[in-house]
Image 1: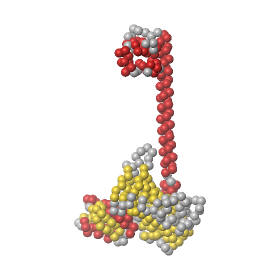
Image 2 (image 1 turned 180 degrees about the horizontal axis):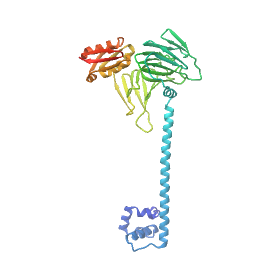
Image 3 (image 1 turned 30 degrees about the vertical axis):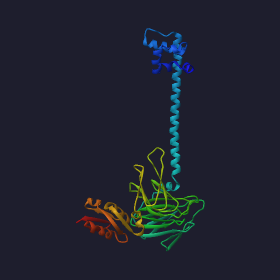
Image 4 (image 1 turned 45 degrees about the vertical axis):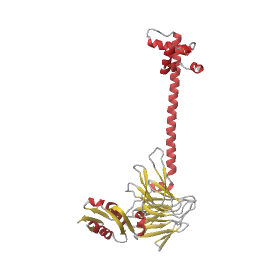
Length: 385
């Protein structure tokens, strides 16, 4: 204890209130012969009695010790500052590398392609070639090697595929159209109206990746050694083999995934500095991601409400008219207006046959809510009677 006390510096003694109080009680008798304590005592007395002065030697000793303390403090501050800056730069670097790694080649390709979703025909865009498909419901099927493409079981085109280079193809399905694609790995994708899918003509040996904007149902062929990834603007879905629906329209504020069977893992941005979170889904659930809040919510659902459009009808379960009209508008590529906005909150349960025209579908709804359906070119007006 005495050794530690002797190692104490004058400035440490003077700035320790507890030590000063103890000193007042013992009058420094316990430290008799301790030069540091006696010097500290004299300094304390000097400040308490303005008439007492330090000797020249004491001034020099005190000045040197204060200068050393100041230099040591500056060094500590500099080290802390450099360390903080280094940590900050390291975090920035890690974040940049993380972002670079997570942004796959196909997402970069998608972000650089300026292909909109116009009305008209479905478009299959190959390297240097574009094929127009004029049917409302179309099918595109790739052979195993990816170099032969069948369209609607009647047309067939060839595409040159290089083993050393990934060739990306794009299917654009305008509003009012739908397309089923069978990829080279035998996975099937049903693209809903107003959707865009980017995919390789033939997948690489170690991964299968596609990029989606819009809505699609995926039935993925099982391959544990080659996981399948669906990449959207905000969420990445990783699967081994399963059936699920992904909805990621550009004009929607959320991205949703509905799992019918199998298992999928979602990756998404989370509210933090370096941020990616994972969520493993189970069948019969829906996960909804909000990019504004960077939050993912999962709930149990009737999956048929979200996948029945593949068979040509909509299953409704206490859905509002506003939600229903948005789906019908996309499906048929029509503009629908309500003369009474309170109708948006009306809820419906049942089935809508999408093989009928948009007017016929809306008339079945109009009978329930006592409304009149009128069509003028591509616009449909719903008026409460």
